[in-house]
Length: 394
Figure (cartoon, one colour):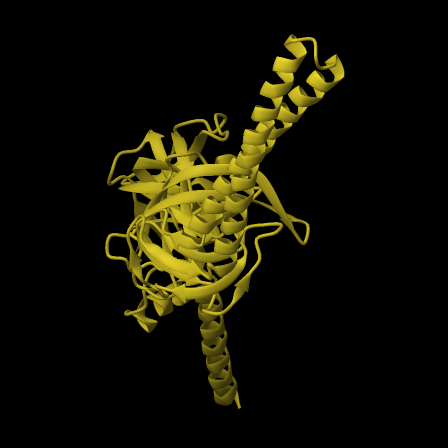
Protein backbone atom coordinates (compact mmCIF):
# COMPACT_ATOMS: atom_id res chain seq x y z
CA UNK A 1 0.00 0.00 0.00
CA UNK A 2 2.81 2.36 0.87
CA UNK A 3 4.53 1.51 -2.43
CA UNK A 4 1.43 2.37 -4.47
CA UNK A 5 1.10 5.68 -2.68
CA UNK A 6 4.70 6.62 -3.49
CA UNK A 7 4.19 5.70 -7.18
CA UNK A 8 1.00 7.76 -7.34
CA UNK A 9 2.71 10.78 -5.77
CA UNK A 10 5.60 10.51 -8.25
CA UNK A 11 3.21 10.41 -11.19
CA UNK A 12 1.31 13.39 -9.76
CA UNK A 13 4.51 15.40 -9.39
CA UNK A 14 5.50 14.63 -12.99
CA UNK A 15 2.04 15.67 -14.33
CA UNK A 16 2.10 18.89 -12.31
CA UNK A 17 5.62 19.59 -13.57
CA UNK A 18 4.58 19.06 -17.17
CA UNK A 19 1.55 21.37 -16.72
CA UNK A 20 3.65 24.08 -15.10
CA UNK A 21 6.25 23.75 -17.89
CA UNK A 22 3.64 24.23 -20.63
CA UNK A 23 2.06 27.17 -18.81
CA UNK A 24 5.43 28.89 -18.44
CA UNK A 25 6.39 28.18 -22.04
CA UNK A 26 3.07 29.43 -23.36
CA UNK A 27 3.45 32.68 -21.46
CA UNK A 28 6.89 33.43 -22.84
CA UNK A 29 6.79 36.27 -25.36
CA UNK A 30 9.13 37.88 -27.82
CA UNK A 31 9.09 40.90 -30.19
CA UNK A 32 9.34 41.06 -33.99
CA UNK A 33 10.75 44.38 -35.24
CA UNK A 34 9.64 45.22 -38.78
CA UNK A 35 11.96 47.72 -40.43
CA UNK A 36 12.67 49.31 -43.79
CA UNK A 37 15.50 51.40 -45.18
CA UNK A 38 15.21 55.00 -46.32
CA UNK A 39 15.62 55.21 -50.09
CA UNK A 40 15.78 57.80 -52.85
CA UNK A 41 12.46 58.18 -54.70
CA UNK A 42 10.04 60.61 -56.32
CA UNK A 43 6.60 61.26 -54.87
CA UNK A 44 3.81 62.81 -56.89
CA UNK A 45 0.45 64.33 -56.03
CA UNK A 46 -1.99 63.26 -58.73
CA UNK A 47 -5.61 64.06 -59.52
CA UNK A 48 -7.60 61.96 -61.95
CA UNK A 49 -10.25 62.91 -64.48
CA UNK A 50 -11.95 61.64 -67.62
CA UNK A 51 -12.02 63.43 -70.94
CA UNK A 52 -12.33 63.08 -74.69
CA UNK A 53 -9.69 63.45 -77.38
CA UNK A 54 -10.32 66.13 -80.00
CA UNK A 55 -8.26 67.75 -82.77
CA UNK A 56 -6.62 71.04 -81.81
CA UNK A 57 -7.90 72.76 -84.98
CA UNK A 58 -11.33 71.62 -86.13
CA UNK A 59 -13.67 73.57 -88.40
CA UNK A 60 -17.33 73.03 -89.28
CA UNK A 61 -17.90 73.92 -92.94
CA UNK A 62 -21.40 75.14 -93.83
CA UNK A 63 -23.27 77.00 -96.54
CA UNK A 64 -24.52 80.58 -96.59
CA UNK A 65 -27.20 79.95 -99.20
CA UNK A 66 -30.09 77.50 -99.38
CA UNK A 67 -30.43 74.96 -102.10
CA UNK A 68 -30.13 71.36 -103.18
CA UNK A 69 -26.77 69.55 -102.95
CA UNK A 70 -26.00 68.71 -106.57
CA UNK A 71 -22.53 67.22 -106.23
CA UNK A 72 -20.24 66.09 -103.38
CA UNK A 73 -16.54 65.74 -104.18
CA UNK A 74 -15.17 64.36 -100.86
CA UNK A 75 -16.07 61.65 -98.34
CA UNK A 76 -15.19 60.62 -94.79
CA UNK A 77 -11.42 60.60 -94.15
CA UNK A 78 -10.67 62.42 -97.41
CA UNK A 79 -7.46 64.45 -97.37
CA UNK A 80 -8.20 67.97 -98.59
CA UNK A 81 -6.14 71.07 -99.32
CA UNK A 82 -7.07 74.64 -98.52
CA UNK A 83 -9.26 76.02 -101.33
CA UNK A 84 -10.27 72.59 -102.64
CA UNK A 85 -13.94 72.27 -103.68
CA UNK A 86 -15.97 70.06 -101.36
CA UNK A 87 -19.50 70.27 -102.73
CA UNK A 88 -21.66 72.16 -105.19
CA UNK A 89 -25.27 73.32 -104.84
CA UNK A 90 -27.78 73.51 -107.69
CA UNK A 91 -27.14 76.89 -109.35
CA UNK A 92 -30.30 77.26 -111.47
CA UNK A 93 -32.22 79.32 -108.91
CA UNK A 94 -29.19 81.44 -108.11
CA UNK A 95 -28.50 82.09 -111.79
CA UNK A 96 -32.12 83.17 -112.22
CA UNK A 97 -31.77 85.56 -109.30
CA UNK A 98 -28.62 87.00 -110.89
CA UNK A 99 -30.42 87.44 -114.22
CA UNK A 100 -33.27 89.28 -112.51
CA UNK A 101 -30.78 91.51 -110.71
CA UNK A 102 -29.01 92.35 -113.99
CA UNK A 103 -32.38 93.19 -115.61
CA UNK A 104 -33.27 95.51 -112.74
CA UNK A 105 -29.84 97.12 -113.03
CA UNK A 106 -30.40 97.82 -116.73
CA UNK A 107 -33.82 99.29 -115.97
CA UNK A 108 -32.33 101.48 -113.25
CA UNK A 109 -29.65 102.71 -115.63
CA UNK A 110 -32.36 103.67 -118.18
CA UNK A 111 -34.40 105.43 -115.51
CA UNK A 112 -31.32 107.37 -114.46
CA UNK A 113 -30.59 108.44 -118.06
CA UNK A 114 -34.18 109.63 -118.51
CA UNK A 115 -34.12 111.46 -115.14
CA UNK A 116 -30.87 113.20 -116.06
CA UNK A 117 -32.23 114.32 -119.45
CA UNK A 118 -35.51 115.49 -117.90
CA UNK A 119 -33.71 117.44 -115.19
CA UNK A 120 -31.51 119.14 -117.83
CA UNK A 121 -34.58 120.31 -119.80
CA UNK A 122 -36.41 121.59 -116.71
CA UNK A 123 -33.28 123.29 -115.48
CA UNK A 124 -33.00 125.24 -118.78
CA UNK A 125 -36.64 126.28 -118.63
CA UNK A 126 -36.29 127.25 -114.97
CA UNK A 127 -33.25 129.40 -115.71
CA UNK A 128 -35.25 131.05 -118.56
CA UNK A 129 -38.11 131.78 -116.15
CA UNK A 130 -40.31 129.39 -118.16
CA UNK A 131 -40.69 126.67 -115.47
CA UNK A 132 -41.98 126.90 -111.91
CA UNK A 133 -39.83 126.12 -108.84
CA UNK A 134 -42.09 123.14 -108.10
CA UNK A 135 -41.36 121.50 -111.46
CA UNK A 136 -37.65 122.12 -110.96
CA UNK A 137 -37.69 120.49 -107.50
CA UNK A 138 -39.71 117.56 -108.84
CA UNK A 139 -37.20 116.93 -111.64
CA UNK A 140 -34.33 117.15 -109.15
CA UNK A 141 -35.96 114.66 -106.75
CA UNK A 142 -36.64 112.22 -109.60
CA UNK A 143 -32.97 112.40 -110.57
CA UNK A 144 -31.84 111.65 -106.98
CA UNK A 145 -34.27 108.75 -106.71
CA UNK A 146 -32.96 107.32 -109.99
CA UNK A 147 -29.40 107.53 -108.70
CA UNK A 148 -30.41 105.71 -105.49
CA UNK A 149 -32.31 103.06 -107.47
CA UNK A 150 -29.26 102.47 -109.64
CA UNK A 151 -27.03 102.05 -106.57
CA UNK A 152 -29.50 99.55 -105.06
CA UNK A 153 -29.75 97.60 -108.29
CA UNK A 154 -25.98 97.45 -108.57
CA UNK A 155 -25.74 96.17 -104.96
CA UNK A 156 -28.41 93.53 -105.61
CA UNK A 157 -26.54 92.31 -108.67
CA UNK A 158 -23.29 92.02 -106.72
CA UNK A 159 -25.09 90.14 -103.94
CA UNK A 160 -26.57 87.75 -106.50
CA UNK A 161 -23.09 87.15 -107.90
CA UNK A 162 -21.77 86.44 -104.40
CA UNK A 163 -24.66 84.05 -103.69
CA UNK A 164 -23.91 82.24 -106.93
CA UNK A 165 -20.28 81.85 -105.86
CA UNK A 166 -21.47 80.43 -102.49
CA UNK A 167 -23.01 77.53 -104.42
CA UNK A 168 -19.49 76.13 -104.64
CA UNK A 169 -18.24 75.15 -101.16
CA UNK A 170 -14.46 75.15 -100.64
CA UNK A 171 -12.29 73.91 -97.79
CA UNK A 172 -11.03 76.79 -95.61
CA UNK A 173 -8.08 74.73 -94.31
CA UNK A 174 -5.92 71.77 -95.25
CA UNK A 175 -6.68 68.61 -93.33
CA UNK A 176 -8.85 65.50 -93.19
CA UNK A 177 -12.65 65.24 -93.40
CA UNK A 178 -13.92 63.87 -90.08
CA UNK A 179 -17.62 64.09 -90.88
CA UNK A 180 -19.86 64.51 -93.92
CA UNK A 181 -23.37 65.45 -92.82
CA UNK A 182 -25.13 65.67 -96.23
CA UNK A 183 -25.88 63.55 -99.27
CA UNK A 184 -26.32 64.46 -102.91
CA UNK A 185 -29.90 65.61 -103.57
CA UNK A 186 -30.41 66.80 -99.99
CA UNK A 187 -31.88 70.26 -99.48
CA UNK A 188 -30.11 72.58 -97.07
CA UNK A 189 -31.72 75.71 -95.64
CA UNK A 190 -29.62 78.63 -94.44
CA UNK A 191 -32.49 80.89 -93.37
CA UNK A 192 -31.77 81.16 -89.64
CA UNK A 193 -28.41 79.47 -89.09
CA UNK A 194 -25.64 77.98 -91.15
CA UNK A 195 -26.11 74.22 -91.58
CA UNK A 196 -22.96 72.14 -91.09
CA UNK A 197 -22.02 70.12 -94.16
CA UNK A 198 -18.50 68.91 -93.29
CA UNK A 199 -16.20 68.79 -90.26
CA UNK A 200 -12.51 69.11 -91.10
CA UNK A 201 -9.56 68.60 -88.76
CA UNK A 202 -6.42 70.49 -89.62
CA UNK A 203 -3.77 68.04 -88.33
CA UNK A 204 -4.45 64.77 -86.51
CA UNK A 205 -0.88 64.76 -85.21
CA UNK A 206 -1.87 67.64 -82.95
CA UNK A 207 -4.57 66.50 -80.57
CA UNK A 208 -5.91 67.69 -77.22
CA UNK A 209 -7.84 66.15 -74.34
CA UNK A 210 -10.89 68.00 -73.04
CA UNK A 211 -10.99 66.69 -69.45
CA UNK A 212 -13.72 67.34 -66.89
CA UNK A 213 -12.06 68.11 -63.55
CA UNK A 214 -14.10 68.14 -60.35
CA UNK A 215 -14.45 71.47 -58.54
CA UNK A 216 -12.71 69.97 -55.48
CA UNK A 217 -9.55 69.41 -57.55
CA UNK A 218 -9.55 72.34 -59.97
CA UNK A 219 -7.73 74.63 -57.51
CA UNK A 220 -4.65 72.39 -57.76
CA UNK A 221 -4.50 72.43 -61.55
CA UNK A 222 -2.08 74.91 -63.15
CA UNK A 223 -1.07 75.60 -66.74
CA UNK A 224 2.09 73.70 -67.69
CA UNK A 225 1.62 70.74 -65.32
CA UNK A 226 2.61 67.33 -66.78
CA UNK A 227 -0.15 64.88 -67.62
CA UNK A 228 -0.28 61.19 -68.42
CA UNK A 229 -3.30 59.40 -69.83
CA UNK A 230 -4.38 56.17 -71.47
CA UNK A 231 -7.20 55.10 -73.75
CA UNK A 232 -9.13 51.84 -73.87
CA UNK A 233 -7.86 51.06 -77.38
CA UNK A 234 -4.24 50.85 -76.15
CA UNK A 235 -4.41 49.65 -72.51
CA UNK A 236 -0.64 49.07 -72.31
CA UNK A 237 0.35 52.47 -73.73
CA UNK A 238 0.75 55.62 -71.63
CA UNK A 239 0.50 58.93 -73.48
CA UNK A 240 1.91 62.18 -72.15
CA UNK A 241 0.73 65.77 -72.38
CA UNK A 242 0.63 69.12 -70.65
CA UNK A 243 -2.10 71.35 -69.23
CA UNK A 244 -2.70 74.04 -71.84
CA UNK A 245 -5.85 75.85 -70.69
CA UNK A 246 -8.29 75.94 -67.76
CA UNK A 247 -11.72 77.09 -68.88
CA UNK A 248 -13.65 79.15 -66.34
CA UNK A 249 -17.09 78.13 -67.59
CA UNK A 250 -18.47 75.51 -65.18
CA UNK A 251 -20.61 72.56 -66.21
CA UNK A 252 -23.27 71.28 -63.77
CA UNK A 253 -24.50 67.72 -64.24
CA UNK A 254 -26.71 66.12 -61.56
CA UNK A 255 -25.50 68.76 -59.05
CA UNK A 256 -21.86 67.88 -59.81
CA UNK A 257 -19.75 70.88 -60.86
CA UNK A 258 -16.84 70.30 -63.22
CA UNK A 259 -14.47 72.52 -65.20
CA UNK A 260 -13.00 71.76 -68.61
CA UNK A 261 -9.20 71.48 -68.68
CA UNK A 262 -7.54 71.43 -72.11
CA UNK A 263 -4.50 69.14 -72.28
CA UNK A 264 -2.07 69.33 -75.18
CA UNK A 265 -1.53 65.76 -76.44
CA UNK A 266 0.93 65.26 -79.31
CA UNK A 267 -0.05 62.38 -81.60
CA UNK A 268 2.96 61.76 -83.89
CA UNK A 269 1.95 58.15 -84.61
CA UNK A 270 -1.71 59.12 -85.17
CA UNK A 271 -2.80 56.35 -82.80
CA UNK A 272 -5.27 58.65 -81.05
CA UNK A 273 -8.59 59.17 -82.82
CA UNK A 274 -11.05 62.02 -82.23
CA UNK A 275 -13.68 61.09 -79.66
CA UNK A 276 -11.65 58.49 -77.75
CA UNK A 277 -12.15 58.43 -73.97
CA UNK A 278 -9.01 59.37 -72.04
CA UNK A 279 -8.33 58.45 -68.41
CA UNK A 280 -6.24 61.40 -67.26
CA UNK A 281 -3.75 61.77 -64.40
CA UNK A 282 -2.57 65.33 -63.74
CA UNK A 283 0.61 65.72 -61.65
CA UNK A 284 -0.18 68.71 -59.41
CA UNK A 285 2.96 68.41 -57.23
CA UNK A 286 6.19 66.43 -57.28
CA UNK A 287 9.18 66.09 -54.97
CA UNK A 288 12.34 63.94 -55.13
CA UNK A 289 14.46 62.92 -52.17
CA UNK A 290 14.94 60.37 -49.40
CA UNK A 291 11.63 58.72 -48.55
CA UNK A 292 10.18 56.33 -45.98
CA UNK A 293 6.74 54.77 -45.58
CA UNK A 294 4.19 56.98 -43.81
CA UNK A 295 3.67 54.02 -41.47
CA UNK A 296 7.05 54.74 -39.87
CA UNK A 297 5.90 58.19 -38.66
CA UNK A 298 2.97 56.61 -36.82
CA UNK A 299 4.95 54.09 -34.79
CA UNK A 300 5.60 54.73 -31.09
CA UNK A 301 6.88 51.95 -28.79
CA UNK A 302 4.50 51.16 -25.94
CA UNK A 303 5.45 50.38 -22.35
CA UNK A 304 4.93 46.68 -23.03
CA UNK A 305 7.38 46.82 -25.95
CA UNK A 306 9.97 48.29 -23.58
CA UNK A 307 9.88 45.03 -21.60
CA UNK A 308 11.15 43.06 -24.56
CA UNK A 309 13.37 45.58 -26.39
CA UNK A 310 15.83 48.28 -25.39
CA UNK A 311 14.20 51.70 -26.03
CA UNK A 312 16.54 54.70 -26.26
CA UNK A 313 14.60 57.96 -26.48
CA UNK A 314 17.23 60.54 -27.39
CA UNK A 315 15.10 63.29 -28.99
CA UNK A 316 11.92 64.91 -27.80
CA UNK A 317 8.78 64.35 -29.87
CA UNK A 318 7.41 67.76 -28.84
CA UNK A 319 8.25 69.10 -32.31
CA UNK A 320 5.64 66.88 -33.94
CA UNK A 321 3.51 68.91 -36.37
CA UNK A 322 2.61 68.74 -40.05
CA UNK A 323 6.30 69.21 -40.99
CA UNK A 324 8.19 67.59 -38.11
CA UNK A 325 7.69 63.93 -37.23
CA UNK A 326 9.31 61.47 -34.85
CA UNK A 327 10.52 58.15 -36.22
CA UNK A 328 12.28 55.28 -34.47
CA UNK A 329 15.53 53.88 -35.77
CA UNK A 330 16.85 50.38 -35.18
CA UNK A 331 20.39 50.59 -33.82
CA UNK A 332 22.77 48.15 -32.18
CA UNK A 333 21.81 49.61 -28.82
CA UNK A 334 18.07 49.29 -29.38
CA UNK A 335 15.23 51.51 -30.58
CA UNK A 336 16.24 55.15 -30.91
CA UNK A 337 13.84 58.07 -31.47
CA UNK A 338 14.73 60.70 -34.06
CA UNK A 339 12.96 63.88 -35.25
CA UNK A 340 12.79 64.45 -39.01
CA UNK A 341 11.50 67.22 -41.27
CA UNK A 342 9.06 65.96 -43.88
CA UNK A 343 7.88 67.11 -47.28
CA UNK A 344 5.39 65.76 -49.79
CA UNK A 345 3.54 62.50 -49.19
CA UNK A 346 1.07 60.39 -51.16
CA UNK A 347 -0.41 58.64 -48.09
CA UNK A 348 1.93 55.69 -48.73
CA UNK A 349 5.43 57.19 -48.70
CA UNK A 350 6.70 60.54 -47.45
CA UNK A 351 9.74 62.61 -48.43
CA UNK A 352 12.25 63.37 -45.64
CA UNK A 353 13.89 66.73 -46.28
CA UNK A 354 16.05 66.67 -43.12
CA UNK A 355 17.06 64.10 -40.53
CA UNK A 356 17.61 60.89 -42.50
CA UNK A 357 20.07 59.60 -45.05
CA UNK A 358 19.61 56.94 -47.66
CA UNK A 359 20.04 53.51 -46.05
CA UNK A 360 18.98 54.50 -42.52
CA UNK A 361 16.81 51.75 -41.00
CA UNK A 362 13.49 52.93 -39.57
CA UNK A 363 11.01 50.85 -37.59
CA UNK A 364 7.53 50.29 -39.05
CA UNK A 365 6.02 48.17 -36.30
CA UNK A 366 7.00 45.92 -33.40
CA UNK A 367 4.33 43.32 -32.64
CA UNK A 368 4.74 41.22 -29.50
CA UNK A 369 4.13 37.50 -30.07
CA UNK A 370 4.51 34.28 -28.19
CA UNK A 371 7.79 32.55 -28.86
CA UNK A 372 6.13 29.49 -30.29
CA UNK A 373 3.97 31.67 -32.55
CA UNK A 374 7.05 33.55 -33.67
CA UNK A 375 8.88 30.31 -34.51
CA UNK A 376 5.77 29.03 -36.25
CA UNK A 377 5.60 32.18 -38.41
CA UNK A 378 9.28 31.92 -39.25
CA UNK A 379 9.09 28.26 -40.25
CA UNK A 380 5.56 27.83 -41.59
CA UNK A 381 5.92 29.63 -44.92
CA UNK A 382 9.46 30.76 -45.75
CA UNK A 383 8.41 31.73 -49.31
CA UNK A 384 5.75 34.19 -48.15
CA UNK A 385 6.52 37.82 -49.18
CA UNK A 386 7.41 40.08 -46.28
CA UNK A 387 5.42 43.12 -47.36
CA UNK A 388 6.33 46.24 -49.29
CA UNK A 389 9.50 48.16 -48.53
CA UNK A 390 10.69 46.40 -45.44
CA UNK A 391 13.04 43.79 -43.90
CA UNK A 392 11.57 41.95 -40.99
CA UNK A 393 14.28 41.58 -38.38
CA UNK A 394 14.22 40.57 -34.80
